[in-house]
Amino acid sequence: LLVIAIMGVAGILAAAAGAQAVMRARWEESDGRVELVLAAPVARLRWLAGYVLVALASTAVVAIVAGLAAGLSFLATGSDADRFWSSLAAGAAQLPAAISFVAFTTLVFVLLPRMTVPLGWGLLAIGLTLGEFGSVLGLSKEVRDLSPFSHAPGIPPVEGADWSGAWALAGISIALLALAFLAARSRQLTVE
Image 1 (tube, rainbow, N blue to C red):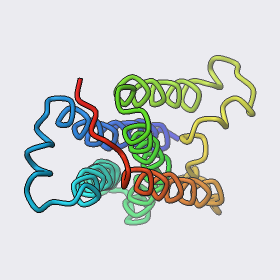
Image 2: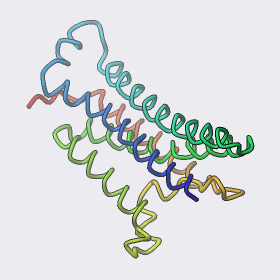
Image 3: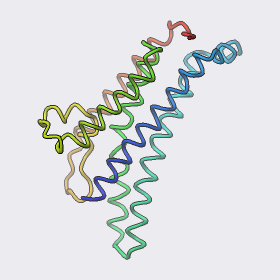
Image 4: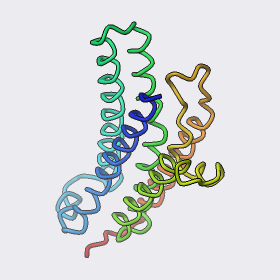
């Protein structure tokens, strides 16, 4: 149960790392530096894709390293190899929820650039509160389920974890990113 809680925190950190990478694109745009980049033979979508790829990679690295660290800790204390693999799986199980924050932040950046930072961090704070503290706060399951973190499969120690929520989040994330890239094709730069 402790590993699930630790991996929940790792999922939040992974989401924060990914969202921060997308927000970096906004800061570059608002500072006027992106105009110099786009003046070179760099397409707008390629520029955005670079930030999204860094965000997705950051998210994956944080989640996987957290699972790896937990697994190695179990091995160091003499636990069997199953604890290592289940810890690694628990880290990976956080990815769909964390990536959904990358997708949302990317869509906000494209559609409402000036709101990227407040909405990106605000949604992450709401997701954290509902997903990690919702039961402590006595919130109903329906309200807790509004957080993507509530849909991460509970592994370990839960056997036969339900991955349907994770698959749904992956589909939603793909749809949000596709919408963001479609909208970015005609988007004008927004400098503060």
